[in-house]
Structure formats: structure tokens, C-alpha cells
Image 1 (tube, rainbow, N blue to C red):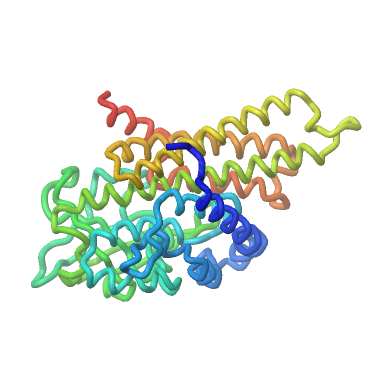
Image 2 (cartoon, rainbow, N blue to C red):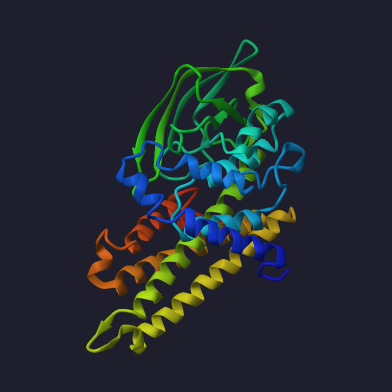
Length: 379
């Protein structure tokens, strides 16, 4: 498969690029909600606009009211979200949660997917329990209680957890904390008793929560997939989320690079444009190459996932690790080549660095995924 977009995907990219540049830019969204200390960290009006464009239901099947598109198409939207630093629940809701709900019952789909497609609902995923991404260890417990379950435990850094209408929670229903089996996923509505959120603002101004479950009663129909068989669903959700996060990271890298190149064409020093200095030209060329390689890796991962290939899981970690390196280089070079003004809030380049740091940690950093690539490759 060619590592570029076909004609239809290119048209979608043009539409998403124009929409996000106009409606999702930093002035209208990130700076606007940050400076007002918005408890959600994103604009619900923009989320409704994205629903009107069909974006929110891209990965929802046509039989459930969505567009039935693939991860290549979702990645196109995510890249533009990253390019404009648009605060949005797209990754958590339209990618992670939508992937998990594909494995849910018809009742669960009917309960939650219409709100996602219409832009009336926002979903979150509660997986991690420590400061680092370690999905192999799940200690939150769901014990049988009557016809349902009683959920007890805590989750860390649940992105948009306090704003979500529903949380997808990974809990242990059997076995020990590090067992592969014995995991079950639950759809937990926001209004259940004994669930609490301690909201925290992350470095990129997005909102997360430390979420506690103190004996939350859930009906049996809250189960996504099979009891004790949730690891497969969890892995599918994480693979989709990691590829999605990598696509957004490419957008962050490309946005920072474009801003830096534009600055090199405008800033003068010693009577000439700094972009005419050969040393900076070499650095800009190297950066462009790294971003393009990262984009190609992400497209490959998306194509494999859409094709249902077994290697998609491995390639998701390759993409996440590669994009972390490329985006890290892009934002660092951007701040340095902007000089002193790059350290101020006046220019957006520093916001790209902050978003990159938060996005790198989400669903595993470069070291986590480099190690995972080695393990999946037999080392």
C-alpha cells in the first residue's frame, strides 16, 4: 500500500485542514479556554461543529449511525487537531471509546453511540493507575454483587474524566494484579454514586482527573465484551489509541516545524534573514525529513489496523516511539531557533512543546514503546 493518501482521503485532509485552522486555532480554542480557566479544557460548541462535519462518528459503523470510516481517515483529523493544538475529546471519545464500544452489546451501543455521533456526549477511558502507563497491571477490582458488580479502586490521569458522560474502566474481576486474563471493561455513567474526581490541569492546559471508585454499583449490562475476557478488547482499544496519538503527534511536529520555518523566513540578524544561514538550513532540512518519516510510519500503522493485520499492534508502538522522537526534535528546534521569544507565552511555539510533552506520556512514552517493540519482536 502506498504511504500517502488517496484522492478521497486528500479531499478529507483539505476539509479538515481548513476547518481546524479556522475554528480550532489557538486563539479561538486553546488560549481562549486556558485563559478562562475552563474546567473542561475544551469547547463543547466546537465539538458540536465537529459532529456536524461527521468527524465524531468516523469510526462508528454505518449501522450505528456513524460514517464507518477507518483509522487512516481518523488520523487525518487528528493530525489537524495536533497541528492547531485544538483541545478536543476526539482521541478519547471518537477513537478509544468508539473502538471499545464496537465490542459492546447492542444495548450499550444504542445507549452511548448516538450521543457521540451527534456531539452531545464526551467519553473518557480510565486505564492507568500510576504516573506511568502500565496497562499490564490492573488493581482496580470489580466484584460480583447481586446481578451486577461493585467497583473499587482508583485511576490516574483520566483525560477529560470529570467532563465525561461515560467512562470506560478496566477492572480486575479475577486473578492477581499482574495476570493477563481476568480483566473486564465497564461502561460507567457519570452520575453513578460513589465515584469522585479530583481534577488536575496538565502541562498543555488539558484537563484530567484522579478518579476514585468507592464501591460503585454497576448493572451486569455495563460490561463491554465478556467478563474476564476484556484484555483483548483493551488491547484493541489501546492499539487504536496509540496510533491515534501518534497521528496527533505528527500534527504537533508539523505545526511546530511550519511555524519555525516561517520564522526563519522573517527574522533578520546581521542584516540578513536567519533562514539564509546554512547551519539553520541544514537543521530545518533534517527536521523536515524526520517529520515525513514519522508521518509515513503512522500511515503504515493506520493501514495495517484498517486491514485487520496482526502486525498492527507492533506497528502502533513503532509509530508511537518514532513520532515521540520526531515531535520532540521539532518542538525543541522550534523553541531554540525562535531564540528568546520562543520562551515567552507571546508566541505559540512554546505551546507546541507543552502539548508534545503531554502527548508523549499518553498511552506510553518512547521508552515504553521501544521496549514493547523489542518484546513483540522476540527479544
